[in-house]
Amino acid sequence: MSNLPLFEQAWSLDHDALIDHCVRQENLLMIQDLDGVCMGLVKDPLTRTIDPAYVHAAQQLDGHFYVLTNGEHIGNRGVNQIVEQAFEPGTVANEGLYLPGLAAGGVQWQDRWGTVSHPGVSTQELAFLTAVPQQITQHLQQQTAAKSDPQTQTCIQAAVLDNPVSPTANLNVFYDLFADQIEQYGRLQQQMQALMTALLQQAQTQGLGQSFFVHYAPNLGKDQQGNEILQPATPEDAGTTDFQFMLQGGIKEAGVLVILNRYYHQRTGQYPLGKDFNARQAPQSQAALIDLVKEKFDPADMPTLIGVGDTVTSKAVEEKGELRFQRGGSDRNFLHLIQALGREFKTGNVVVYVDSSGGEVKNRKPLQLEPTPNTAHSSYRVVAGPGDDRDTHDPLTLNVVFPQGHQQYIQCFRAIAQRRRL
Image (tube, rainbow, N blue to C red):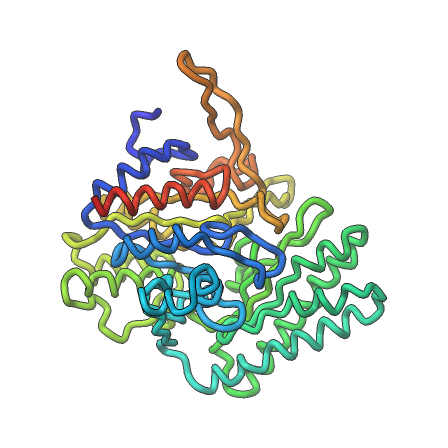
C-alpha cells in the first residue's frame, strides 16, 4: 500500500482504498462510461447484458452517480432495453431503475425514470441522422459484394447501429470475418472513413455544415485540424472499429460540465451555467472548459469527482528520428478533465480505469501485472498500462485500475453504494 493519497497514485490496485475514499465524501459525484466498464465488450451490441445488482447499486447512488457514454439510452441497441431485459416487465419503469446521465457523447439526457431529451438538437438535424443507417448499410453491401461468405449479410446487420442521434458502423464482426485477410479489413476501415467524410459533405449542402462530426473508437487522438485520427488494424489489433456519426458538442468532456451544472442545481437550487445549458454550448478545449468552471462554479460546492472509463490509447509515431505519441481513446479527454479539475479545486478527484481487454473486441491492450512477494501473502503490481510503454510523460494518470474487468469493478461499485447507504 502506498502512503500517497489515492488521487496522487498511479495504477493502484487498492480497491478498498477507493471504496473508503468514496464513502468518506459527502459531496461525491461519480461519472462513468458504460460499455467495457459495467458491461463486457461484445461484437454484437444486441447481445449485451447487464448485472441487475449493478443497476440496483446505481439507484442507491441516486444523485451522486451519472453515466457518460457515446452509446445511447434509447433505440433498438440502446442501454435502456438491456436494463429492461435484466428485470421482470415493468419493473425498471415502476422503480426508476434506468441509468441516469448523458448518452451520444453528451447530447442525450435521461433521468432514472427514463425521461429522455436532446437539449440543443434541431428537428432538421434529427431528420438527417435518421437516414444515415441506411446509407451505412448500402455502403457495406457494396464494399463486401465480392465476398461470397454467407456470413456477410449477418455481419452487416450486426455492424449497422441505428442509434437515433449517433448512427454507427461497428466493424468488430468484420475483423473476424477477414481474419486471414487483414489488408481487406484495413480497406474496409478506409472505405468507411470515406463514407463518413461524404456524409459530412452531404450535411454541408443541406445547411448543416456545423452540425456533425465523426468519432472513431478507439482513435489516436486528433490531427491539427481537430479531426480524430483513425487507428489502422494489425493482425493482433482491430484498431478503429466504431465509426460514429455524431452531433457537434457530443464530446464527453463537454458532458462533464452538463452533469456538473445539474449536480449543482440538485445541491444548491442554482444552475451555475443556466437551466438550459447543454453540451453544444460548451467550449471545445480543456483549458476553456476549466476556465468556465472556475468562473461560474462556487468552489465551496465543488464535489469530489470519480471518473471511470476503459478506452485510453497511446501510440508512438517516429518522425525524423524522434518519437511522438498519439494519445486518444473515447474516455481520455473526460477523464483528463476530471483529473485537472481535481487539481484546480483540490477536491481529491480520482481517475479509474477498467481493463476491458478480456471482452470479445480485440482492440484493447491489457494491463500487465507481476507478482510482488510479501511476507504475509503474494500480491501484484501493475508494470505496464494501456498505452505505449515508452510514453512516460502521458499527462493522464490512471489512479486506480481493475485488471479483471467489469465484473471486478462492479463488486467495488456495489460496495461503495452499500456502504454509503449505511
